[in-house]
Image 1 (tube, rainbow, N blue to C red):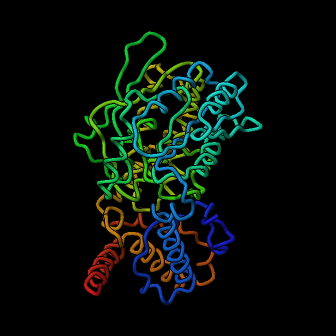
Image 2 (image 1 turned 90 degrees about the vertical axis):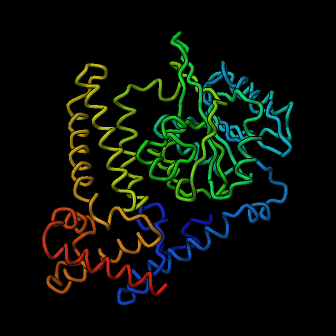
Image 3 (image 1 turned 30 degrees about the vertical axis):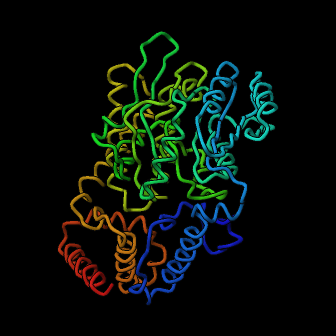
Length: 434
């Protein structure tokens, strides 16, 4: 694999390093640090290889017969709905090739038989990937990750077996937009939310939520993704080699959107072209709200370290809203939480609030620019150098997490204010040189 240890044995991809994809444009100030110099060189090689592989042209060269669009259809015990989902894909009006990759998690009903019947009728379009054993709820994302490894198209869409598309021109419109607007990484639309218990249908309304058609990365973080999975067509930025963070058990569609949000903006078409069905047999419908909230909280925390410090403030804002919503639901009696769960949400609320309040005014944490990751690494190394000079015997025992705490708690001390000023001057000087 492109991201495996065979190619980069000194790079721990699955260790959730905050340096993984954060750009480090100018490593020259780190020339006196052997570890950071090697790290910068390794990340530079990784990003160069990733960029070269992730272009649409290279994907075509790897497989000249690859379709224009790949559709991943994720199923588990969806015998009542799978036919409608497949028909909604097959009815798409298009002038390009597509493939439908059905990823089934060892269904115990007749879902696999229905899929095989469709494959017999459309062998050139439908591919089946059936698990021999059920991976279960907590490992659902591992199943999705395997599906990502089958996507050969220049663009891809995701759909669950109990959802469906409502507009036959959905793929055609979204692909046409992405073809003509290369600065966007994905195209989404509104989604109809259907309740099978008789409640009236609702809309996912990302257009009204944003008040505009364009969603940037901070929007995706602060508003928890907002787009439903069935509504999005993505550029295939990773080819057949998705990053292994997508295999994490706590990853989800929100994390997928944030991951691709690093490469460009999302565009929203102001009409609904897909339907999301809410019923008792759904993956999340079978779990209580407490389990779902804890699941997403763990995912946010792990992905925050993956994304790096650049989005800490936005992640903190999302965690604050998430925790307050859960605690308020408990107070109103809508979702009683165990004492242990309440303590977890209170702890996240306090820590995220502290990080957000203290770090928001600091340019180090709020600046948005290509040199951001580099500045963060520089200030961490600067503080580590001071520790090494004053406490050489214990410097190696101090993790970077304690240095981050130092930055947060000592923000108003003159020495740290002086460090911020010198960091600003250094950044300005680097920009002038470039």
